[in-house]
Length: 136
Image 1 (cartoon, rainbow, N blue to C red):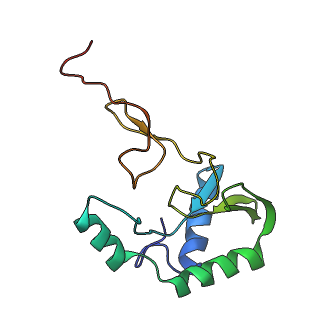
Image 2: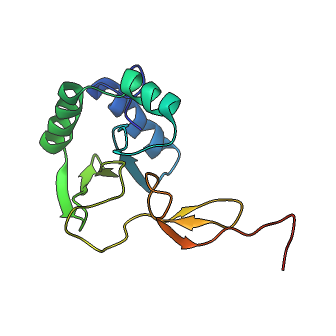
Image 3: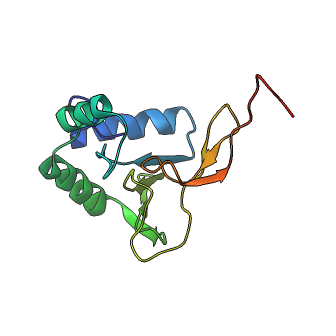
């Protein structure tokens, strides 16, 4: 996750890429922290607003990646995959809802057994949670 004070400059992204190559990480996805449209956590949303990467810093990272990498493909939800110095780097966004699409791009699994496709909406459930206290 790209955040202020974390991976927020080309130099820090280069260090992350070097780490991935050193440790045989096959695929690296970078994405900015984003506040969801709707949330039940005012505290979490506020934290993201105060710690998320700026749009300017995000643009610099995207341009750096585009200028140094070879574009391999664009995924259906808009993420772009690059070969960057032999490292697979996917530049994506963290939110899971795509306008004008019924395609599910993210599966979010919870220990309770709940399977969702979006963090923002309580109704985005594929499989309900298992009540471990009262199994049927």
